[in-house]
Each structure stands twice: as structure tokens, then as C-alpha cells.
Length: 142
Image (tube, rainbow, N blue to C red; front, top):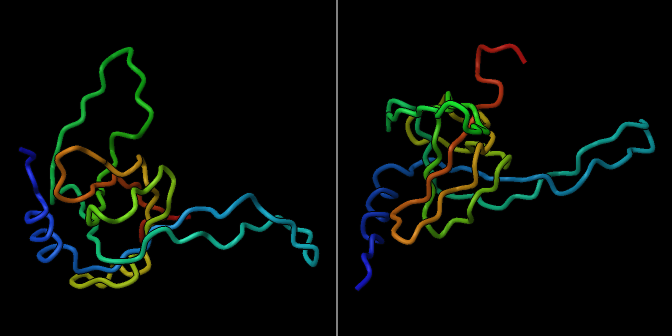
């Protein structure tokens, strides 16, 4: 018998995933613009647009302790997590997450994050969790 958490995922989606988020990734290498002579990134490829929630560290606190002498590829100060339904595509490292519509906090609309890790996948899962790093937080210099 397998533990089925679809009912829990549906509950979390109904209660918490009121925002509309978009996950996109680069569509390819930069392309030369013959008019300007500049290399320009092609429009990104949208891999997901739908319900989600961006949570900060106050929503799900945790402690990360690096072990001396062990590789530690990402910044342990990452404080944001993205929740998406399990049937949403798994975000890849360096995908961009943008909030298109926010159910509760209008300050989220238009903000973007970089996926610090691929979205989590597991045998027993209720919702997909992806760790995020914020791009140019409001009030920060670019």
C-alpha cells in the first residue's frame, strides 16, 4: 500500500496557492541583433503558469549548518520557497519565477526569483517545493 497525499496537496493548493506564478527558462543562447550589433537574449520559454505560493523564511523556518570541509554549492541564506502543485513541471536550477497575480500581497506582483535548486521530487509528496533566490529585491540597488 502506498501513502497517497493528493488530498493534502489539494488542501494546500486551496488554502495557500492563491497567487498566479510563471516559471520560465532561457530559450537559447543570445542572438546577434544586426541593427544594433548587440547580443540579445531570445524571449524566455514559459514552462509553467498557474497557481503557486512564494513563502519567506517566516512561513517555514529551518536551520542549515554547513559541514567543515564539505562542498556547499549554494548560499545558505536563501529564504524563499516556491510551492506549486505536484502536477506542475519541475523547475530547473536558474529558471526564473515571476508573480503575475497575488491574492494577498500586491508587493509580490512583478517580483522575480532565481531557482536555486531543481524543484523537489519524492516518492511521497503533497506539493512541489523549490528553493529561490530573489532577483533585485525592492529597495536594493541593481
